[in-house]
Length: 316
Ligand code: NDP
Image (tube, rainbow, N blue to C red; front, side, top):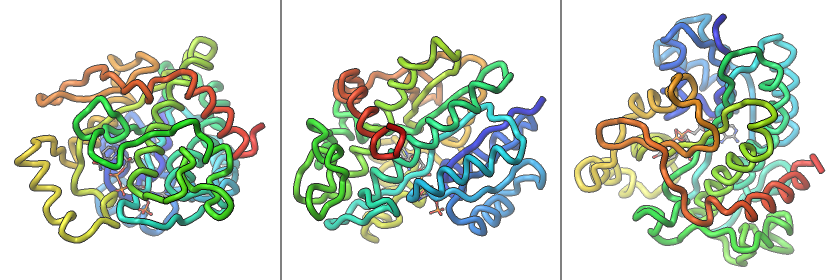
């Protein structure tokens, strides 16, 4: 039978390109889990995705209620779940004041990490029940959270510290909106921190559930896709210069179509079944198992992050 894959944030950029790549194989039905239903439906049509190869469903990761409603609505469709891709993200690089989710958590970590954490925890049940031969749970990572790379060393550097801000609820007013408890808010760092959370969460899922369920847990850095909507809040000059800079100076530029193929590989390629891996691609577009920085692979931090996140999303 066809596989069923849920992709969050499939209304633009990498998520849309992967949705298109998977639907075109004819082997996958893609559930596009998006906060803006109309935008997603229009994007799928404009991308030329065949009617019937996808379903658009509403999911706003900035609301834990919406996450729970999405899971209920998905179950009511009767579709099995064979692969879940936690792809959506927001990036507020110039923000000096925090904004908050419906539940009152700082937005970058709230959407990129906490919303996905609840979604993945709830949908693990659905993945476990699936009879598909290779079930996968994929959480997007990034080079920017990895201090063992050049890009990961551009200030502000990611760092979760002792997670005291997260333990305090990332509220901002009476505590800190930053995971490390720093009192001043930095939107660029909040994004990088959220990506460390994504990579730690994938590994903690692997440690807790891989052996018992056989599910493959994976993360990836798809390359620098300098043209996506991720940079929409950056200053105009940055948006103008970043794509040519990546294309001609760092040579790390990857097109949306190529990045979509990479993510589609992690969903469906029979050779990428190893669990607990952070995939990257070399200049010839060949995949390899990449190393994570010390912090992004710290098991003690991953355990603490897991337990605090459970409390914040109401699972503990
Ligand atoms: P885009 O901004 O193009 O796509 C992000 C998607 O997330 C959009 O569909 C957006 O929806 C959705 N989204 C944002 N907030 C919410 C929310 N509250 N609820 C549901 N969906 C939401 O960025 P990219 O395609 O570049 O990013 C995709 C992933 O790739 C991210 O995880 C990012 O960290 C990762 N990544 C990207 C890199 C790059 O160079 N671009 C490099 C490394 C990793 P809407 O369309 O409605 O705004």
